[in-house]
Length: 235
Image 1: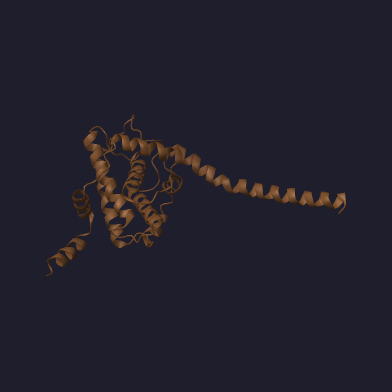
Image 2: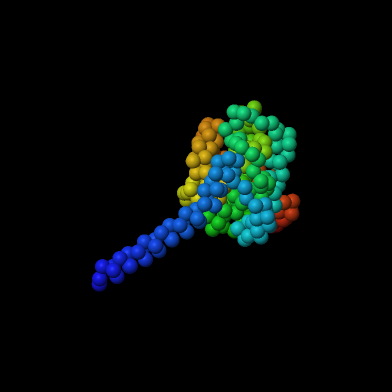
């Protein structure tokens, strides 16, 4: 093969490689933009129209959705009652995320179930993480009376609560890199907020079965309670 042919082949390889690099760089621009948005607001915005898609997913069924919806409603009421900003709050950052509390919890629960390959009922990992998170939040407010939920901190607190709950209750290890993508928060912030959350709870992460069952029952649809009571009364 002559020098001219070798030079032509090398030129084609370099051109193809350069094109691939340019395509890779172009593809990464939206990711970098999302990352910058995440750093600015604390939670990258998720199109709220996705909420309907999340609800239709088998990963979070009607029973699971009802429980998540009831938990989210309690959190929203607490935000209305407690919603004062605290400059020293480690979970508050930037603007208010453009996704509702309920849709964000549906997103987190759905992806926990996808990760664990669960269907989304009361016994699923995603619902369990949501119930454990609300218990952790109650403990936080008991231990830190000045701490309150607000629109700027609730999403990041939920992210940390879910992560801690999953790590405590599941026998598989969840990647923080994957959880950062699911939650819309940078991996560095995920790691930092997980540490803050655990320290604020003084690492008292154990939840008694009776406390868990009582809390879950509080958020279940009324029809579930009736059906289970009828079943328990049968001989």
